[in-house]
Picture 1 (cartoon, rainbow, N blue to C red):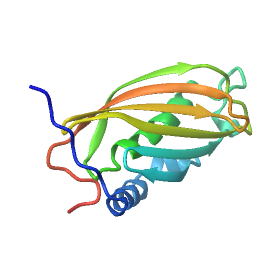
Picture 2 (tube, rainbow, N blue to C red):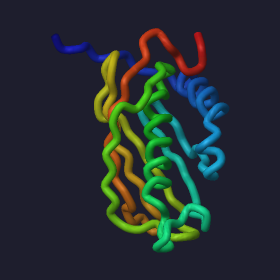
Picture 3 (cartoon, helix red, strand yellow):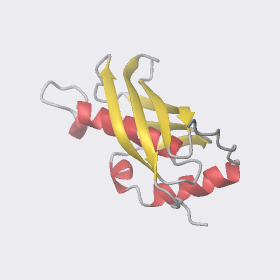
Picture 4 (spheres, rainbow, N blue to C red):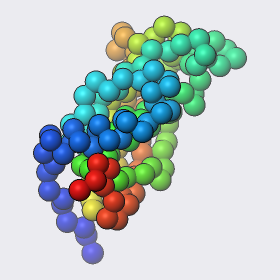
Length: 149
């Protein structure tokens, strides 16, 4: 049986969910990420690559890039104020991130049902070069909201 389409989400609901999630997102804050924009099913996040984010080759560590992309996906997928947790994430590294790079992660909703969601995230640097592409799936936690109510 196919799941039905879910209703649109107001910007007020998106803003409440964003604020509640960000308030407790210590990892993203510690990495210096900033939320640029969150709309229903979409998120833009920024981060500057610091020296403590570099691997042994002097490039931004793949785990840091994955965390950055996962953060954008988290805000996009939780923007409907329905608690969503990642169940799968695939990453393609296309170019290196370097110290000082100003990165942007843009996540958008590909598919959303009452139970699951599929999200694509693109990470670019300050010149528009695509650094990484991520595709992730989330599972919605029944009955749970991000911001309460």
